[in-house]
Length: 240
Image 1 (cartoon, helix red, strand yellow):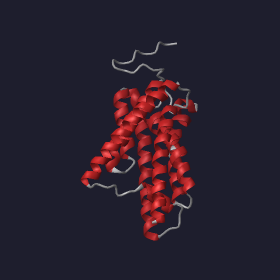
Image 2: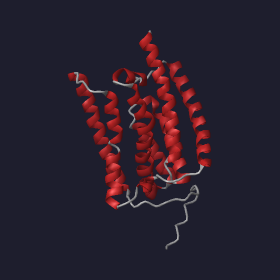
Image 3: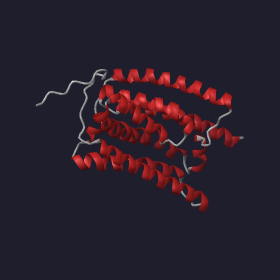
Image 4: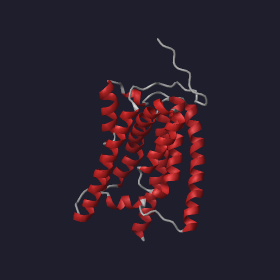
Protein backbone atom coordinates (compact mmCIF):
# COMPACT_ATOMS: atom_id res chain seq x y z
CA UNK A 1 0.00 0.00 0.00
CA UNK A 2 1.34 3.42 -0.92
CA UNK A 3 2.07 5.88 1.86
CA UNK A 4 -0.42 8.69 2.26
CA UNK A 5 1.04 11.95 0.87
CA UNK A 6 2.25 14.46 3.43
CA UNK A 7 -0.37 17.22 3.89
CA UNK A 8 0.68 20.65 2.62
CA UNK A 9 2.01 23.12 5.15
CA UNK A 10 -0.85 24.53 7.18
CA UNK A 11 -3.08 21.51 6.53
CA UNK A 12 -5.20 20.44 9.48
CA UNK A 13 -4.17 16.99 10.58
CA UNK A 14 -7.08 14.61 10.03
CA UNK A 15 -7.78 11.11 8.85
CA UNK A 16 -8.08 12.56 5.39
CA UNK A 17 -9.57 10.27 2.77
CA UNK A 18 -8.88 10.92 -0.88
CA UNK A 19 -11.91 10.83 -3.16
CA UNK A 20 -12.02 9.58 -6.77
CA UNK A 21 -14.40 12.20 -8.13
CA UNK A 22 -12.73 15.09 -9.91
CA UNK A 23 -13.07 18.84 -9.98
CA UNK A 24 -14.90 18.38 -13.27
CA UNK A 25 -17.44 16.14 -11.50
CA UNK A 26 -17.90 18.87 -8.89
CA UNK A 27 -18.59 21.58 -11.46
CA UNK A 28 -20.94 19.28 -13.38
CA UNK A 29 -22.79 18.59 -10.12
CA UNK A 30 -22.96 22.30 -9.38
CA UNK A 31 -24.25 23.01 -12.91
CA UNK A 32 -27.00 20.40 -12.44
CA UNK A 33 -27.86 21.96 -9.11
CA UNK A 34 -28.06 25.46 -10.63
CA UNK A 35 -30.23 24.12 -13.47
CA UNK A 36 -32.59 22.63 -10.89
CA UNK A 37 -32.56 25.95 -9.03
CA UNK A 38 -33.59 27.83 -12.19
CA UNK A 39 -36.36 25.31 -12.90
CA UNK A 40 -37.59 25.72 -9.32
CA UNK A 41 -37.58 29.51 -9.57
CA UNK A 42 -39.50 29.27 -12.85
CA UNK A 43 -42.03 26.97 -11.20
CA UNK A 44 -42.41 29.40 -8.31
CA UNK A 45 -43.03 32.32 -10.66
CA UNK A 46 -45.57 30.28 -12.66
CA UNK A 47 -47.27 29.19 -9.43
CA UNK A 48 -47.79 32.82 -8.44
CA UNK A 49 -48.83 33.92 -11.95
CA UNK A 50 -51.37 31.15 -12.52
CA UNK A 51 -52.43 30.66 -8.87
CA UNK A 52 -51.54 26.96 -8.89
CA UNK A 53 -52.66 25.07 -5.82
CA UNK A 54 -49.52 23.39 -4.50
CA UNK A 55 -48.36 22.82 -0.95
CA UNK A 56 -45.17 24.85 -0.58
CA UNK A 57 -44.02 22.62 2.29
CA UNK A 58 -44.13 19.58 0.01
CA UNK A 59 -42.36 21.51 -2.74
CA UNK A 60 -39.59 22.52 -0.34
CA UNK A 61 -39.09 18.92 0.81
CA UNK A 62 -38.88 17.66 -2.80
CA UNK A 63 -36.51 20.49 -3.70
CA UNK A 64 -34.06 19.51 -0.97
CA UNK A 65 -34.25 15.79 -1.74
CA UNK A 66 -33.43 16.41 -5.41
CA UNK A 67 -29.91 17.46 -4.36
CA UNK A 68 -29.15 13.81 -3.72
CA UNK A 69 -29.53 12.91 -7.42
CA UNK A 70 -26.47 14.74 -8.89
CA UNK A 71 -24.43 13.71 -5.85
CA UNK A 72 -25.37 10.05 -6.29
CA UNK A 73 -24.82 10.09 -10.07
CA UNK A 74 -21.36 11.64 -9.89
CA UNK A 75 -20.01 9.66 -6.92
CA UNK A 76 -21.85 6.53 -5.77
CA UNK A 77 -23.01 5.39 -9.21
CA UNK A 78 -20.10 6.63 -11.32
CA UNK A 79 -17.29 5.31 -9.11
CA UNK A 80 -19.14 2.40 -7.43
CA UNK A 81 -18.62 3.81 -3.95
CA UNK A 82 -20.31 3.26 -0.58
CA UNK A 83 -22.22 6.15 0.98
CA UNK A 84 -19.56 6.50 3.66
CA UNK A 85 -17.34 8.02 0.94
CA UNK A 86 -19.53 11.13 1.19
CA UNK A 87 -18.75 11.54 4.87
CA UNK A 88 -21.31 9.28 6.53
CA UNK A 89 -18.67 8.12 9.00
CA UNK A 90 -18.12 7.97 12.74
CA UNK A 91 -16.84 11.10 14.47
CA UNK A 92 -15.41 12.11 17.82
CA UNK A 93 -17.41 14.10 20.35
CA UNK A 94 -14.53 16.55 20.80
CA UNK A 95 -15.26 17.95 17.34
CA UNK A 96 -18.91 18.49 18.32
CA UNK A 97 -17.71 20.51 21.32
CA UNK A 98 -15.44 22.54 19.05
CA UNK A 99 -18.36 23.02 16.68
CA UNK A 100 -20.57 24.30 19.49
CA UNK A 101 -17.93 26.86 20.42
CA UNK A 102 -17.57 28.02 16.82
CA UNK A 103 -21.35 28.23 16.39
CA UNK A 104 -21.60 30.45 19.48
CA UNK A 105 -19.14 32.77 17.74
CA UNK A 106 -21.30 32.54 14.59
CA UNK A 107 -24.45 33.46 16.55
CA UNK A 108 -22.68 36.45 18.11
CA UNK A 109 -21.56 37.59 14.64
CA UNK A 110 -25.10 37.10 13.33
CA UNK A 111 -26.57 39.12 16.21
CA UNK A 112 -24.34 42.14 15.60
CA UNK A 113 -24.70 41.82 11.83
CA UNK A 114 -28.50 41.94 12.13
CA UNK A 115 -28.19 44.83 14.56
CA UNK A 116 -26.28 46.80 11.93
CA UNK A 117 -28.92 45.96 9.31
CA UNK A 118 -31.64 47.10 11.72
CA UNK A 119 -29.94 50.45 12.35
CA UNK A 120 -29.52 50.94 8.60
CA UNK A 121 -33.15 50.06 7.97
CA UNK A 122 -32.29 47.11 5.71
CA UNK A 123 -34.81 44.27 5.65
CA UNK A 124 -34.84 40.98 3.81
CA UNK A 125 -37.50 40.76 1.06
CA UNK A 126 -38.00 37.14 2.11
CA UNK A 127 -39.24 36.45 5.62
CA UNK A 128 -38.96 32.85 6.83
CA UNK A 129 -42.15 33.10 8.86
CA UNK A 130 -44.02 33.54 5.57
CA UNK A 131 -43.32 29.87 4.81
CA UNK A 132 -45.76 28.82 7.51
CA UNK A 133 -48.55 30.79 5.84
CA UNK A 134 -48.06 29.03 2.47
CA UNK A 135 -47.74 25.43 3.72
CA UNK A 136 -50.65 23.12 4.49
CA UNK A 137 -48.91 21.93 7.64
CA UNK A 138 -46.06 23.49 9.67
CA UNK A 139 -44.76 20.01 10.44
CA UNK A 140 -43.57 19.46 6.87
CA UNK A 141 -41.65 22.74 7.06
CA UNK A 142 -40.05 21.60 10.32
CA UNK A 143 -39.27 18.14 8.89
CA UNK A 144 -37.62 19.67 5.83
CA UNK A 145 -35.72 22.41 7.62
CA UNK A 146 -34.58 20.43 10.65
CA UNK A 147 -33.99 16.91 9.26
CA UNK A 148 -33.89 16.81 5.46
CA UNK A 149 -32.04 20.06 4.72
CA UNK A 150 -29.13 19.61 7.17
CA UNK A 151 -28.47 16.04 6.01
CA UNK A 152 -28.91 16.57 2.26
CA UNK A 153 -27.10 19.92 2.12
CA UNK A 154 -24.13 18.62 4.12
CA UNK A 155 -23.85 15.58 1.84
CA UNK A 156 -23.88 17.85 -1.22
CA UNK A 157 -21.83 20.85 -0.08
CA UNK A 158 -19.35 19.18 2.27
CA UNK A 159 -19.35 15.47 1.40
CA UNK A 160 -19.32 16.07 -2.37
CA UNK A 161 -18.40 19.66 -3.31
CA UNK A 162 -15.87 20.40 -0.58
CA UNK A 163 -13.99 17.10 -0.85
CA UNK A 164 -13.85 17.25 -4.65
CA UNK A 165 -12.48 20.81 -4.61
CA UNK A 166 -10.04 19.92 -1.83
CA UNK A 167 -8.32 17.33 -4.04
CA UNK A 168 -7.16 20.07 -6.42
CA UNK A 169 -7.11 23.31 -4.44
CA UNK A 170 -6.35 22.23 -0.86
CA UNK A 171 -8.66 22.38 2.14
CA UNK A 172 -8.56 26.13 2.81
CA UNK A 173 -9.41 27.16 -0.75
CA UNK A 174 -12.04 24.42 -0.93
CA UNK A 175 -13.58 25.66 2.32
CA UNK A 176 -13.78 29.23 0.98
CA UNK A 177 -15.25 28.18 -2.38
CA UNK A 178 -17.78 25.72 -0.96
CA UNK A 179 -18.84 28.16 1.77
CA UNK A 180 -19.27 30.91 -0.83
CA UNK A 181 -21.43 28.68 -3.01
CA UNK A 182 -23.39 27.53 0.03
CA UNK A 183 -24.15 31.16 0.93
CA UNK A 184 -24.97 32.37 -2.57
CA UNK A 185 -27.41 29.57 -3.48
CA UNK A 186 -29.63 30.50 -0.51
CA UNK A 187 -30.66 33.46 -2.73
CA UNK A 188 -30.81 35.99 0.08
CA UNK A 189 -28.06 38.59 -0.54
CA UNK A 190 -28.19 40.19 2.91
CA UNK A 191 -27.72 36.81 4.63
CA UNK A 192 -24.60 35.87 2.64
CA UNK A 193 -22.03 36.91 5.34
CA UNK A 194 -23.50 34.82 8.22
CA UNK A 195 -24.26 31.82 5.96
CA UNK A 196 -20.74 32.03 4.50
CA UNK A 197 -19.29 31.96 8.02
CA UNK A 198 -21.38 28.89 8.85
CA UNK A 199 -20.19 27.22 5.63
CA UNK A 200 -16.58 27.78 6.71
CA UNK A 201 -17.30 26.27 10.13
CA UNK A 202 -18.99 23.23 8.58
CA UNK A 203 -16.06 22.68 6.20
CA UNK A 204 -13.61 22.94 9.10
CA UNK A 205 -15.56 20.35 11.09
CA UNK A 206 -15.51 18.01 8.09
CA UNK A 207 -11.76 18.52 7.71
CA UNK A 208 -11.18 17.53 11.33
CA UNK A 209 -13.14 14.28 11.16
CA UNK A 210 -13.85 13.37 7.50
CA UNK A 211 -17.46 13.07 8.66
CA UNK A 212 -20.49 15.20 7.81
CA UNK A 213 -22.21 14.42 11.13
CA UNK A 214 -20.68 17.22 13.27
CA UNK A 215 -21.74 19.75 10.62
CA UNK A 216 -25.17 18.10 10.34
CA UNK A 217 -25.63 18.49 14.11
CA UNK A 218 -24.64 22.17 14.00
CA UNK A 219 -26.82 22.71 10.91
CA UNK A 220 -29.71 20.96 12.67
CA UNK A 221 -29.36 23.16 15.76
CA UNK A 222 -29.20 26.37 13.71
CA UNK A 223 -32.25 25.52 11.61
CA UNK A 224 -34.20 24.39 14.67
CA UNK A 225 -33.66 27.70 16.45
CA UNK A 226 -34.38 29.71 13.30
CA UNK A 227 -37.57 27.86 12.39
CA UNK A 228 -38.86 27.82 15.96
CA UNK A 229 -38.43 31.61 16.15
CA UNK A 230 -40.03 32.07 12.70
CA UNK A 231 -42.98 29.89 13.66
CA UNK A 232 -43.51 31.86 16.86
CA UNK A 233 -43.52 35.13 14.87
CA UNK A 234 -45.94 33.65 12.31
CA UNK A 235 -48.36 32.72 15.11
CA UNK A 236 -48.16 36.20 16.61
CA UNK A 237 -48.93 37.66 13.16
CA UNK A 238 -51.86 35.25 12.83
CA UNK A 239 -53.30 36.23 16.21
CA UNK A 240 -52.87 39.97 15.70
